[in-house]
Amino acid sequence: MANALATDTMPPAPDMPGPPPTNAGGPSPRPQPQNGLVQQPQPPPAPTHQQTVAALRHFDAVRSTWEKIAKNPEFGKSDLKKAIIDGASKLVADRIVKPDQAVTMLSVVPSNPFQQKKWVAEQIMHNQTAETMVLDHHRSAFYGTPDQDGQQASTMDTHHDDLAGLMGHYKNG
Amino acid sequence: MADVSNLYPAPPQQQQNALAGNPLGVIDMVSKLNQNALFQQEFNAKKAIGHAYQKAINPQTGVIDTPTLMREIQANPDAGFLAGEASAGALSRQGQAISNATSAFTLAQNQNNYLRDTFGSLANKPNLTREDLYNAVVMIGRNTNVPTSTLTNYIRSVPNDPKALRDFALSMQAQAVGASGTAARVAGPPAQSGAPTTVPAGAAIFGQPNGQGGQSGPPAMSGSITTEPAPGFTEAKTALAQSGAEAANRLREANDTSPQRKGMLGNLEEDLQHFTSGPGADWTKVAKSWVNRNVPLPKDWQFDPKSIASQEQFTKQATQLVQAQFQSIGGTGTDAKFNSAYETSPNDTLSQLGNQGIIRLLKGNEDAIQAKNKAWLGWKKNNGPDTYDEFSQDFNTRFDPRVFQFKYIPKSEREAYISRMDPQDRARFVQDLVSAHKQGWVNYGGMAK
Image (cartoon, rainbow over all chains, first blue to last red; front, side, top):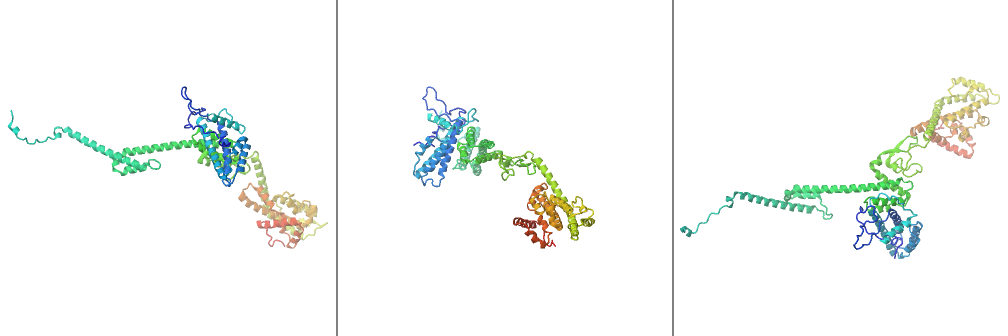
């Protein structure tokens, strides 16, 4: 089932582009399909600077939550659902995830300590993979662009909108 | 016509030497032999060099080890024919490998410099937050080939704490400056005297003016240091130094003339022993006797028995001298400790001391002047001549004039002297007495009659 903190909010892996110095400044690293040829699926547009910053903020906060749980001496030995709920609540309070996302995530947390440990480890791994993929995607598309002129920086006030925009790229891709 | 001789078998004809008819064939053959030998040598050499290469390739990494290759070529005689070319090729390949490694290193170095510069510049932001770190990571990603995992590791490694984040940025800034840059001296905060100082640039980056710890007081921003004294500090320091120097000079002058005054007080005490004071007593006799023994009077001598004609005038003169003594020691005459030894109203208290008591007080104060001057000389050696105010404050917290008077109180009267004090005052007096003794300011051994 979907996990609001990782699977759902984590963008699916974008097609990994080639080496960074490609399509500098362009929205997509891949060549466009030509007329008359079979239309191939469009790769998702690359995340903007703001969207990438929002993604890093999200992944950093989520990672911190999971790692805190993983450092609990009872991790893998006892049911830490309460600690997981506390962590999710903090993420909601910090406006990192929306309440409904947190509820969705909490509904799939296993109760068995061993399964819980395995599940949390997977969340950490998925989180890290997604973080790398988003940053890779952005850097390959905008390689050599020193600054994002004319664009507003991502802040906590725009966090959810920036993340929604990022998710929109990948869902349509 | 047939020749009979044809019937006989012909003797075998002597075979002609093929080369005899064609001398150039010899040359051709020699050439071919040489070519064959050349081919063989080249073949063997290539074979030997091939073996040498095989032995020089690291089976784990696939990398050719040039020194091993050169040794193998040198050891195998078959390789000798092509040793020159093979060596040149090996060295050329090694040179290329070095060049490639150098280029890769330079690239990585430039990327790291960019990374350090970008992270280091965050330290200059007044309100550094983790948001700045995210933005920096994304920008570095766009502008370098630093592996993504390395960049995200930076986010993971920096604790979620503003101070740790700033320390990280400062550390990057120091790395960007480099070892020689951080060792260079830059302007530091002024010394206590206001004199300019220098500190290592690295210490300045981390806001450690002395290179060891944080500067005194909370800095406006971590990493910043003050290099100029506060407005008016220099002027105030100059005025204080001047005031301190004047006070030190007064003490020195008082100390210089103290033995003389003390001697004269001794004379006065002796004269008073032969004088019956009281209402109607003729003080002019005392004055005349004392003046005869103490001419000429020293400069600034505050006590003038010549003008004494009554108890009141004697007390008034004594009061003036006590005030002058206290000022030399550093008191104002109104300090609690001085007041405990002497009240400024001559009619109320000083007169109650009795004439002998007054002389003891004056003599004790002279001892205090000498003790303080001695202590000042010791302090000055360790703390500098411009610290008189600090010294005087330190000395006066441990100084009690009565401790010095106590020396001149006869042993038989000491107990009564102490018992008249209230308990709290007595405890303080005893404490000061012990302290003065430890400091070497007083020595009561056989001093009082």
